[in-house]
Amino acid sequence: MIEFEHVSKVYASTVSAEGVQALDDVTFMIQKAEFVFVVGPSGAGKSTLLRLLVREEVPTEGEIRVGGKNLLRLRRRSITRLRRLIGVIFQDGRLLPDRTVFDNVALVLRVRGAARDDVRWRTQQALRAVGLLPKEGAYPRALSGGERQRVAIARALVREPVLLLADEPTGDLDDESAGEIMELFKVVNTRGTTVVVATHEQGLAARMRQRTIQLMAGRVVKDSGGAV
Image (tube, rainbow, N blue to C red; front, side, top):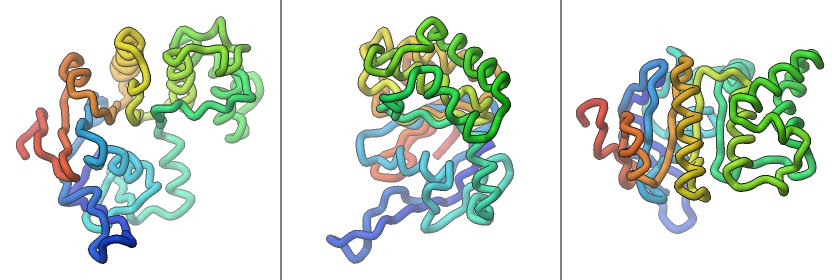
């Protein structure tokens, strides 16, 4: 499903002529329908890794394949098609404050030009899956932090993604809410979706008992699913 082969990423810097090394010779493989945590402290390269997967960034060196396709060789139209297969969840949710819960989730389908009945059915199914259908008419300001994050998950799920990426999805949540979010990810994963969660909370990853790839200063220092 996902292959990183000797991937490095260096950002230009006004301070150093050599730039800032975000990832350094990273190699790993994630199979279809795996649930994987990418852990490490702030600055370890976790967010960069996710941005590379959705082709928001390109590597300085190495190759990345998703579904057998080399991301460096994709044309603009193919990049758009790839992103439609990926659901992305950010730490802050990035909900539109002036739109209802329903509209926040439905927006991605409307942008694609889906039929009205299809938009309603799929949006309500996604909200039902995260337990928020009764609040479809509420606005984000009326929701708790955990509820807002569940709306963000529903928005990702409504795409029916083959790959779900989550960047620090529990960073601002209490333990109970974080546990609920992780249980949702487990359910999604059992349905065949590949799930990759980036987090600095190594204890959370340990409690979930899933494969963990640990980054430190841009390098993979441990992979519970294989040797480094």
